[in-house]
Image (tube, helix red, strand yellow):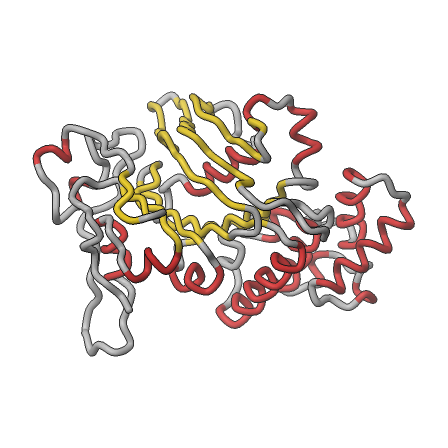
Length: 331
């Protein structure tokens, strides 16, 4: 919980990840670029299959191989390229410097081990402490996430879904990582518990002075927690900006479509606006801009050339030559 240096913590440059199968090659992530400052929270938004989780697993160096292949790029964490690290070096980084919270807490917890021992195991892996000290620290972590110390000897099945996710958060934060990656951490929870868990994560992120990547498809969660937002479509980031700029002036046609599909409590409507068509097959992406078959602003050029990122305002980047900040303005 010590004060950390300021500046850039994570920089992903031209990251490309494919899944090579007998049926063809899945272009999961294509030439992805993003950056994250120390203490910042980045919201990673997109439909299912956009490549959000693959990007997170790529940062953790947990892409299943085969079929996954990192085809190119750099993942600079604290100035060092994680793609050049050995597996033993990565084991020292995972948990200690970069930790991940997954969607379903039951897939992250060992059902036959008490929760205190699971937290203590992570602590002993990265800190030079004995078993007694690690178990005491495990109890401290449980209390920190709102679980009474007397429950530390319970098994995962004795906890509710929200409590299990609190245990997973305790494990993730046990070694004070600099970067926390949360992959839709509240998807399996009901709405009221979602709010509690998100509030807890927000509080602990500030307390631990950590940076966070929050993967979600919920624009409301992004508005509540994140500082910057990356909108992802078909393996590429199509818009990247700070939260205020994105919400007041979405510029990419896909981002505008996402915002238009959110119900407005002030409007009396019988149906919502939808983005026409479906996400493209990642084994057979359209030529040029992957969004052009569904886009209302498409031109002949859109089908021929993949657009690069343009800066339409300071810190606001969009991968669309038609976008000049004329997206629907939301006050």
